[in-house]
Length: 115
Image (cartoon, rainbow, N blue to C red; front, side, top):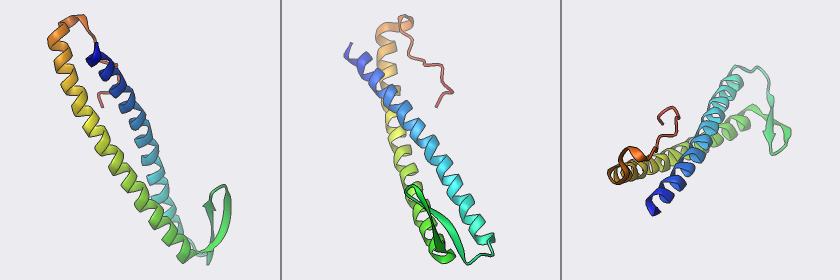
């Protein structure tokens, strides 16, 4: 029973991290697109979102801010991916243990895309 509970908790944690990872990947793509837009911009100042408001900042400062934010986002993606890999290994070990004990009487597949 303890292994079943542990599998359930780890599986829930895995899916929560997976959602965070998907959101971070979208944010990362948006940041890269913003960097491209700034490079193509002819303006001396651009609107940059800080908190909940847009602030007019020089292009050079916006580039620095975007670069920093992109690096932080990539670090977060790498950290969450490492956690996901660790959880995936734990889940695989628990599956082996639980299938060995219960055989076909237990279903540990969640019907997801296999990630």
